[in-house]
Image (cartoon, rainbow, N blue to C red; front, side, top):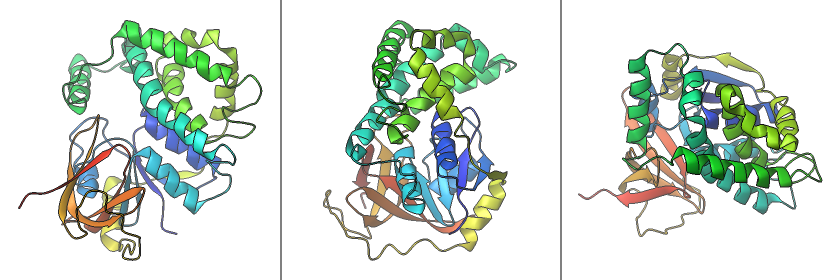
Length: 311
């Protein structure tokens, strides 16, 4: 197997989700640190536009969105499973809720003045304003949840998650599942990156104990890699052969069509390329770039919009 390369930055909550999965599966990986705001020229040379963090690279195959990345890692290292039976389906549902609803409320809570002071300690005012403008652009102008609503919603979600821990050590049972990794990262941000606000967790001691267990999993073994080295890896590799993948045509768009794929919310930069595979769960584009050669960019179907480019 080619190297697992994670394009991320240390304070990214969703990157923490994948770093912890690497640790759980005891996988070695390469760490490429990317900017936390645009421009990200080396990353977008790989993705063609997609800029959310993290992105995983295996040779000339580029994987976007942590739900898909988790599925790919499950195939690479099936044990221990992220989707243990009999809660495999339920764990995915909880994970999707946590990645969207819990994360949104947590970030509204975390980015109040005390949290901002923690997150941006030592950062000049212009750096803070650049971050705010970048995230506003990622939302496509949609308003952020107000602090009051975020706080009340986050507290409610924490109580619900705590209730899931009354009879076993992890959310879905006696071993971690994808639900745990998805629920952990918003609270990790509160505890580790906005510690002035971490008192919100005191009302749910079962969650605090669970967080200690999750943190102990660690990040596995990793080494530093530069973005230039990652681009060269892509340039020297050949993408996976996708010609035998079953074609599931839900959009009336044939393989070989020039298309765009865009997230349906947050991070609305489109990726354009040739549609080379469309399965029940995944869309794959082929792109060519002078810095990377030919790459395949993989997206999950859920959460993304496929459109044909008008000729």
